[in-house]
Length: 197
Image (cartoon, rainbow, N blue to C red):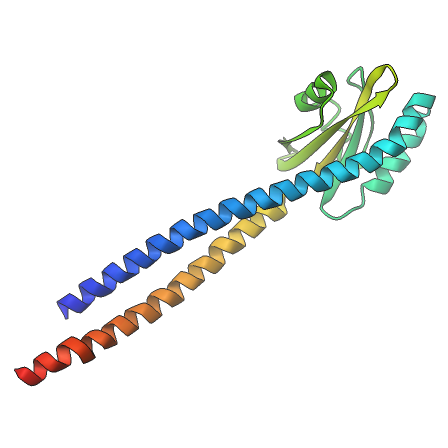
């Protein structure tokens, strides 16, 4: 009985190690895939927003921007939109972000200074948000930036689900392998030894 317990414990340990390694790889790949998808969706939405915002800013009609922000702010997993001018002043923002974004995030200033779009995570009102910033242009150069704000909590929910599913899968595998090993030891080893004795 001692031998079979050692074998079962060894098999469960090896199985758990393999499941852990594969789960870590799966989580890393899924997180990377979801981040690329979030960045791609933010970029596409930002480009379509730029087409609406740049002409209004160029013609000097910033009063129409809150309507555009409100229209685009009601989309799947999109928390909000903010628009800044080149003087780092908040021109328009989704109602939820007017207060927290009155001070311009450093990534927005960096995006305008480098004239390159990009994304980063920020904590807003105690919740992590993904900010994707796209510079706004006119003929002379950068005239501001549009910030697409996403709620990335679905990424963490997906990661937790992977861990949970793989843990359940591990428990089932460990139980089946342990029972199979125990039965094989009894039939193949313990049975013939008992007959010989």
